[in-house]
Image (cartoon, rainbow, N blue to C red; front, side, top):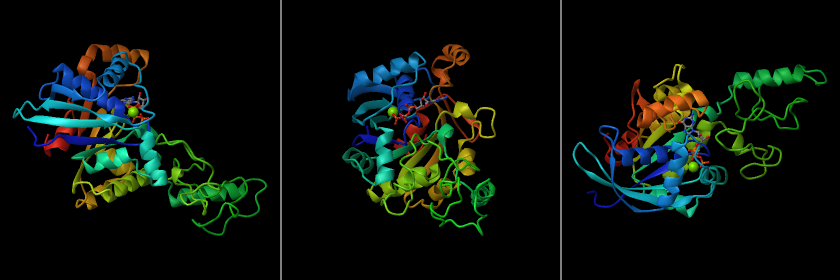
Amino acid sequence: MSASPLSVVFAGFRETGKTTFLVALWHTVTNDEVPGALSLETFYEGDREYITQRHSEWLAYEAVKRTLVDHDTPIQMTLREPKQGRLLQLGLPDLSGETFKVQYEERRASPVLVHAIRGATGVALFINPQTVSDPTRIRETWEALEDAAEAPGSAEAPSGPSVEQSPEEAPPGSSGPPTGSVPASTEPAATDGIEAGPTSETASRDGSDGFDVSLCCSQVKYVDLLQQFAELEPRKPLRVAVIVSAMDTLDGTEFADRPEHFLRARMSMLDQYLRTRSDLFQSRVYGVSAQGGAYDEATIRTLAQLGSARIRVCNNGFRDNDITRPIRWLAFGEE
Ligand SMILES: Nc1nc2c(ncn2[C@@H]2O[C@H](COP(=O)(O)OP(=O)(O)OP(=O)(O)O)[C@@H](O)[C@H]2O)c(=O)[nH]1
Ligand SMILES: [Mg+2]
């Protein structure tokens, strides 16, 4: 038995798949259907009703209810690892995406989050590929500004790409330089589950320079979040399992079963940050489909035939149904 309970923090902005993962994990450890997976020895603390209610939603092919406020009493359970018979006492708080939004946008850490990060053996960092906001390339920014300047009624084309162009100087029809949305778009997207906040004219981290942190692209937010975690004095290096959730939505793309490629291609700064700051973080990338697919009629029929095998975990082109793999790595440093 571990000397003291280990704790894993599920981190990620809103609707990135944290609760669905927790529920699929609960299903796996309580059903003993997946060979090699951790299994539940005892449930000894936490709100059992909360997890069983979310589990019922998952079994009924309904999206689990959003976690609007932190569910700060961690689910505490003892899990058995079958290969060596090791027992693992694990605490899993179900935190709300709002907590991470506030942490990133306002740099205000909730006591629950500080406590969780300081006591964590590892962090599962959730990224939903459906809501990732790509960085805007400088060339695309420039072309968008040119297009806006050439639009009827505009004064003149800008004389060169300037990232310092103020909203007042922006060409008519534009609301200022694009600030991190999907490529070639000047419209800020409501992504990462973070609603587009007040306009850049009225809001910024310090309220003075027209810079709106909520509009930054996803990887900037995640790197910033990790940097803030590092400042909370967690164990070093802290294990980080990057969980690319809803992997079923990447089926048929070049990223199918290859979440590490998704990270490298779509979030290269986050990827590089984790590689270069190995003094702070030890990381691995997992792709997870905790639902098994979207909840449309045809998919539900397929999922119903699969049972526990509807849960999918993958990396490096390998796929199985053991959602406890990332947890084993976070807890023991090996799967
Ligand atoms: N297609 C697909 N959708 C998923 C999967 N996992 C989660 N989702 C969807 O992603 C959305 C968010 O899932 P949640 O688990 O509630 O996310 P969360 O991170 O707990 O969100 P907050 O509670 O708001 O912080 C829901 O609409 C889910 O249906 C998956 O494996 N596949
Ligand atoms: Mg949740």
